[in-house]
Image 1 (cartoon, rainbow, N blue to C red):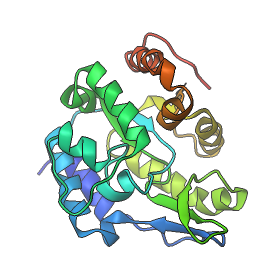
Image 2 (image 1 turned 135 degrees about the vertical axis):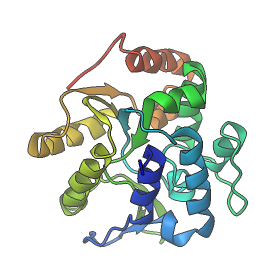
Image 3 (image 1 turned 90 degrees about the vertical axis):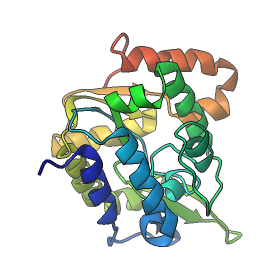
Image 4 (image 1 turned 120 degrees about the vertical axis):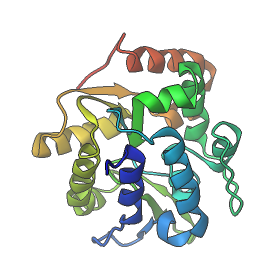
Length: 235
């Protein structure tokens, strides 16, 4: 029996755990273990858009936020857009994630979720949310590259995770990296593991929403042009 991409991604997420070390003050959120409804809505999403064996291009983020895929299990997708655009409701959580807003504007400009997800698969080198404890005791989103020790501790897991994604049948001749700093670290990983032939770098959705909001239409156009192969910034 042929396993579809949806079957394989769901299996990957079902088995996804991080048992490696972390520096003091960091923790990992695994919604597939911590939130009972996450596995259900994640499965609905992948069966809706990836229930086939078609080859897709790979878009690589940093790591999920605690309000996006850290809840839904779907990269760059908060519960609002999961409901309003993908028509999949999550009953036990309601989240708003800044990066999701921009990316789904790109998706709608591309032709909608069916067209976009037919061509692209999104995930991250570290596919679980990372948080960091502040001096006041609260927890904030963290990136895998925010701390040198964190990067070194998680790098073997990230390489293994990226290799597993590639075995899903993704196109590795050209991948899209979200975030220029992220691209520098992915470049380091790629030099060691030899995973991708070419990397196309795009500004991260959060950076655009937070610092370039007035120019966001220009950035949406940049994304569309890059994703359709008309213009690139490469490493």
